Length: 493
Image 1 (cartoon, rainbow, N blue to C red):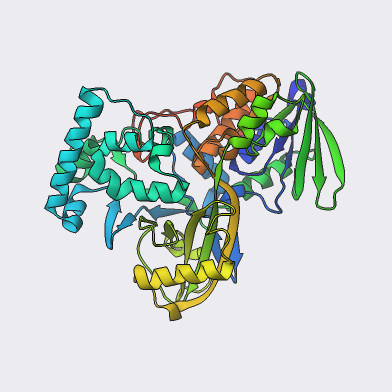
Image 2 (cartoon, rainbow, N blue to C red):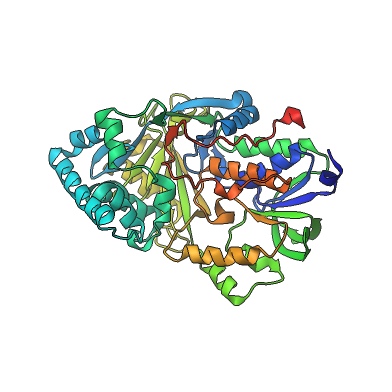
């Protein structure tokens, strides 16, 4: 440990995957770390709830990254806790089941040749509009139609997207599509499923790694290493940061309160924020101009109710995910934890499901009682999907999660730019993670951002904000993918 590292004290707000990854990288390099978390658990959205011995993630979180160096870091972290899961995903659309990513042969089989003709014609029309005549892409609908044509957009993207975000696709930014499906088009779908012409070095992913006992084990392992790595380190739960005073470059006073209202102030050389980007400017001193406050307050999130169902049934389906398009079904996605790891259920003669109901605090779904949400979801499973009988249900539990998904409305980019301009005046302050940057990261993206931010704080020339901006579809694994081996091997410390 060098003298510079001995003097550093990094305070990290939030014990989600990004904040803990930053702390993990700094700990390995001998920097003092204090993590402050408002919940009574680590992991944030990567939490795993336990109910009557059954384990339920907050939605299906897999571990998949194109960066093999990051995979090596993950293997070192998790050791023998890793299991491999076959990726089987489907879309439920108007009573039929379609493989996802889209497979043309499967669409023909389920929807018919006439639908494919429609899809082909609408794609050619879109190609004329967006490629030949350079029609501008102004929103999410434009982006999807440009890639797939209006027929496939309406079948496989519109309904689910609007269910997730609670807004028409015309009112959502195209940035979402560029992040989540850049490089994917009807041509890659045809190559994969019909012509079989994919490169030997490029393929859609077919399996992924997963922690045997639930996704929360990843943040738990990072937190364990942080606390064990240095006696000065801490992970402070049930504590909420209420104020950050900037005294000058790399000199901050961070104030937080515990559940009993006791107030503590600590000094930090650097502050890492994973709390929602819309909240951060409002607890900083010196305070921003009203324009920044207004931009921060107007950033929106979608919330989530997960319904965890325990069933007297060995298996419901073989899927890792099922995306449910139909508007009259309350949940938008489901997964079966037992299909990911048998350790997620205590009795192998039974199984369980996680049903994700996308909503916004105060809307008609959020206002339903837990009993009403659970009963409605059970009825949808039984009567609309035909997956279960109502009598199969042993028990269910509802978990409500605020600020789960950052909303990419048409004005969000300008708002973020204005907030970041203000934050740039605080030397030593960093934002990271899904909520912290208002960017829809997968968990592996947030962890990679955190690890790279740790390297940046240590003085390395890395751009951690470059993560999750690649121009290629994130479900395609290619030999051209970036390899960034910046994650310090613990043995080198």
